[in-house]
Image 1 (cartoon, one colour):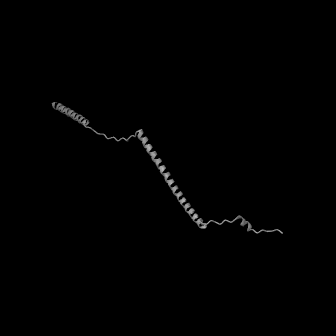
Image 2: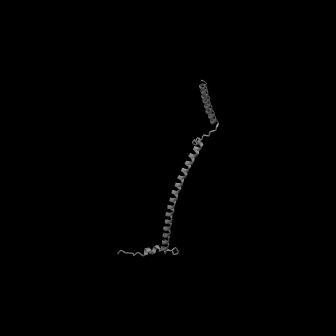
Image 3: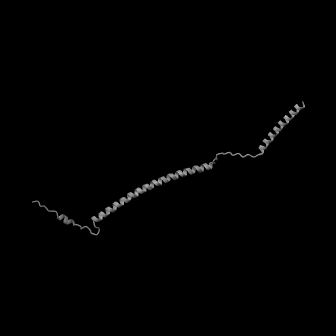
Length: 125
């Protein structure tokens, strides 16, 4: 019987030893520091969202103004081309007029009487 008791005591002590080792190993793991990395998306504040909205709006307005100015520039170019053509035509007309009528010579004036006397007078008999 002694051998049976000894076996039970040895088995009990070995079980206690295993439990003791398990507990000490878990305690040792708890004392080590663990670093967890959790990624959370950045949350914008109301002010930041307001600034972002203002930037988007100002960019859109700037694009609109630039498009309008580009259109106005194209229109101005067309108008300038037309004005240049008109100016050239006016210069051509003034040169033609200068050739037709010299500026230094005045046209002779005819007296009104000579124009009347030039008509034949018919007498009724």
